[in-house]
Length: 288
Image (cartoon, rainbow, N blue to C red; front, side, top):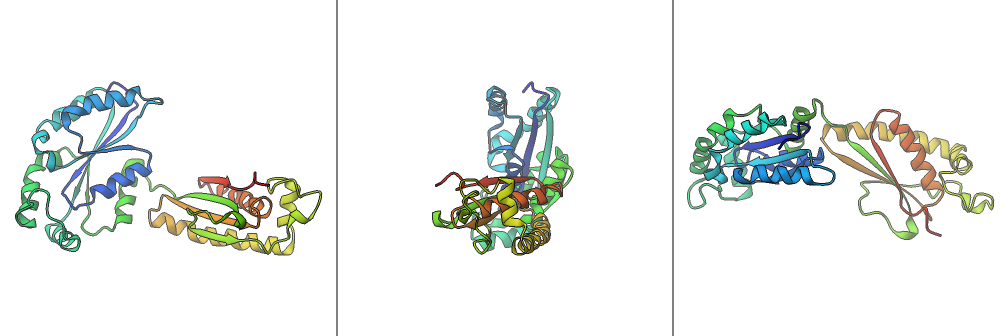
């Protein structure tokens, strides 16, 4: 791969140590992830990535001992990629035998390298096969004491230098059209004064300053908005700690045109002022 701007992360480690979780964390960071790509196909695959529109420059590749026949070729392949100017990182996940055994007992899975034998035999065989891959690691993560949220946060911190803040998605909607399925926190604002009953405001939306003032600049609207801001300031940092990539907050009124839109716009401005990424969708504002 000739692109010096490419960032390629190889993820390897023992089966059961958390490779799937690590790859999911990379996907949350917008990496294009592929599991167990044979070493001989890596160069061809990366070339195809450069030909995409736009080029795919953030790539995660999982490598494990199931590709035993290809492992011996991996060090040379990684060195060649580094010589090409691409940014290459190798992440190795380790875990104690005791914890791995417990994980296999809980899931009742067989070890991929010992399908007809004991899990202990599979673990020891895999450790031997991955010695050279482990030696290539730029950083190692010991996952024995980590839950999935902690492991994701650890991966993100290694890749980006700091844990990624939870992105807030805000959706306004009308209850008459149903509740969005993606909503995790939902607020019903149908008790607020309704601009629909004001002829001069009826055809406008909650994005209109005069409509927004009608919704927010009264005792009820002001009290609600202050409490919503307080609640978001309390909750969202807790999602950061859990390593949650996104949280989706829905605000609904009757038709999804006035009150919910005004609240979502104001809430988005408030949350963005803290430096957090916010996405806004007004699902039903165009409906009659």
